[in-house]
Length: 335
Image (cartoon, rainbow, N blue to C red; front, side, top):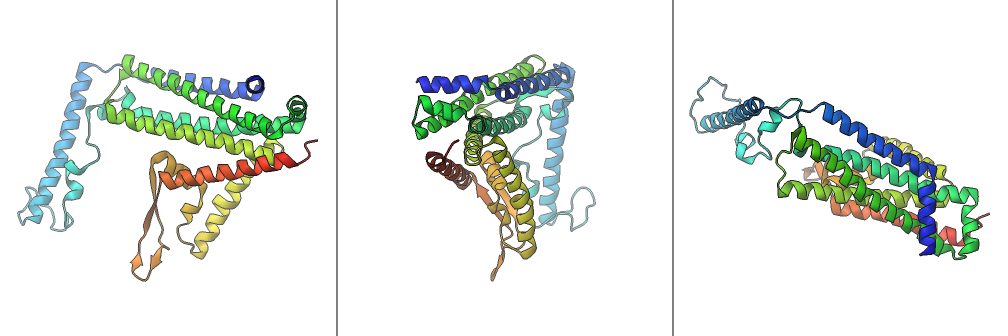
C-alpha cells in the first residue's frame, strides 16, 4: 500500500497531469457555457409548431409510400409521376421500416435537447479521455526513466516488476476514477441545462442503455490508450518515444501503407488499420466498401468489423506492448 500511495502522490504532483486536468475543466466550462448561452426554454407556441411540422413531415412520408404502392399495383398516383419514379419495391419509402421518424424536438431552433446531444457530447469526452490516458501514461513512466526517478525508487523497493506493475496499475486506476467522475460531472451539467434551459427529450430505457454502452466502451478505450502509452514510453525510455511511435505509425502505416496497398489492389485494407478497429469498438460495428474484394462468383463489395474482434485486436496490441515493456524493463540497465 505504501508503494501505491507513493505512486498516486507522484502522479498527482506532476505538472503535466495538473495541466491536463485544468484543460479538461476549461473544456467542460466553455462547452457548458456556450450551450447554455445558445439555448432557451421553448414556449408553448414553439412546441405546438414543432409538433405540427413533425406531423406534416410524417404525413408526407406516408403519402410517398402510398403513391409507390399505387404505382406498383397498376393504379395511377394522384399526381402525374413517370412510371420509372419508384423502384420495384416500396420498402425504402415505408415509414414503418425507418429507424427513426421525425419528432417535435427536431424542429425546435435554439433549444438544447439532451436526448439529441448527449451522444455527440460523450464522444467528445471519450476523445479527450483517450488523449489524456495516452499522454499521461507515457509521461508518467517516461519522465521517471529519463530523469533517473525509477532508479531512486528501486533503491527503496528493489523489485523491478513489482514497481513497474504498481505504476501501471496506479495509472489505470486513476484513469478509471477520472473517467467516472468526469463523465458524471460532464453529463450531469448538460442534463441540468436540458431541464432548466432546454428540453430533456425522450430519455427512455433504450436511450440510457445505448449511452451507457458507449460510455463503457469509451472508458475501456481510454484504459487501453493509457496502457499503450505507458508501454511505448517504457520501451523507448522517454515520453517522446511514445509520441514518435504513434506519429510514425500514422504516417507510415495508416497513410503510406494504405495508399500502397490500395494501388496494388490488396483486399480489405481497412481491417488492417487500428483506427478501423477503434471505430468498430466504439460504435459496435463499422461497414466498409472494397471494390477489390472480388472472386469467381462476383464482388462482395462491403464488409464489416464488429466490436468483439475489434476489442481483441486492441487488447492484443496493448498486451503485446506491455509484455515487451515488462520483459525489457526486467533485464536492461536503467542508468
